[in-house]
Amino acid sequence: METDRKSHSMKKLDDVKCQRVDQPVVPGLDDEVTEVEHLLAEPKIEHVSVDGILCFGNENIEKHLKMEDFSCAFDYGWKISAGGLDSIRGRGGDDLKLEVLDGLLDEVDEVDDIDAAHDLSGACEDFLLDSEFPEKLSELDCGPREGSTLCNSSSESHSPGFSGRSNSVGGISESSTATVRESNSENGGLGKRVGCDLHHNFRRKHGCQGPVMDVGRSSIEHMQDLDESDDDEKPLVSLILSNQKVKSSVKVTKGDTLLRQKRLRKPTRRYIEEFSRNSNMEESKSHKIQPQEEFPQVPSESQPWRGRPKKIVLKSDYELSASESEDGRKRTKRSKTACDRRKHQKMWTLAEVIKLVDGIAKYGVGRWTDIKKLLFASSAYRTPVDLRDKWRNLLRSSSAQENNRREVETHPKHAVRPLPKPVVRRICELAAIHPYPKVSSVNYVPSSEQPTTKGTPVYYSA
DNA sequence: TTTAGGG
DNA sequence: CCCTAAA
Image: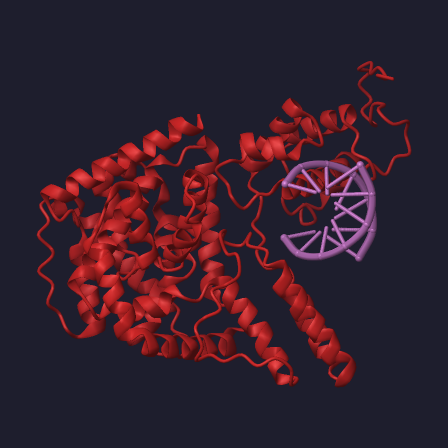
């Protein structure tokens, strides 16, 4: 199965490659280009020799319009004209791609690169996905070309990392690699500085987490939903791949994009969070962060929010508490850290829950790793622990729902996400079969049946 | 490294 | 969701 998937994606890659040979394969890049021109005020892209561009007609345009709206909606005071817009797009969307990639290409070693690449995509992409995913999905399935349409709506410049990696995979773009190098040497310093400033602003304006991210996340959620339902993301692969291609093309054409590219590439979501945290510390005198310096390349950031740079966080906390005892600002610090504790929580979809329940039914309670591997292989953000936690919560909520069903029905407000009856039933059954310690408030005999009054005889195995 | 349990 | 301890 794994290999199957792999080969599949490879195939897709090949397709992409082939296409690229014949034609620039940058469908819809056209739109993109206009946009870039806009931003850079230095249009000279003749790259747009696309045959298939006509295929997308209205829809494509529509998408872009939406995108614009979206961007506008997020003008937070910092300049969107040159970099702002870009950076907005730069975040959030990546996670999306990353997720997908993580699921699909976890065989690849250079996750870092992927990650980097992901850091760049666009929130707008998410946005689009969010609003039109269903259609999009089918579209994508039709082939890389279609995929590109969508992708091209993401940001134009993209990480060197990916192109490098692509080479190893399918030799997608050599030119892009070269360009990248060039860019790095050219715009390195400036890019960094700008990036920092950007982040300063960002942080200042929205605390550690900007709305952008939120948007991105929610869209991701939707996507996940769909993705989840059939556990197949191949279309997305093509999407991503073609996206990369587009990116490289653009890169080749535009050197200027690189500046932004650099700036975008660096900071990760995680980084922003860390950064804000550190800045707080800086306030209280310890640990100084030098923005001018190379971005700390967010520690072990191979997964979107799953990164868990434990050590760093711990260290920060440590220092925080240290400074706490020194200055009297305890409370501020405390609350702040407490606030951003729940960094990346992703809502569980019904599909996921059902899947989880299925998995538990199959493999039993406690084999979280197995369940994760077999049923949640595609969702990188669900760790076995998450599954377990979710199960715990499910047990709790389901039992609650069972007990006060009437009350819940009378006060629907209290039932936020009611959880379909059948699911609850299944959970209860499973709970009966696999007692999860500590969860059932009932002090019943270990593996006995739960309050279910239906007389299913349960036998003790001992 | 995975599970269990607590926060 | 995060963290830690124990296995």
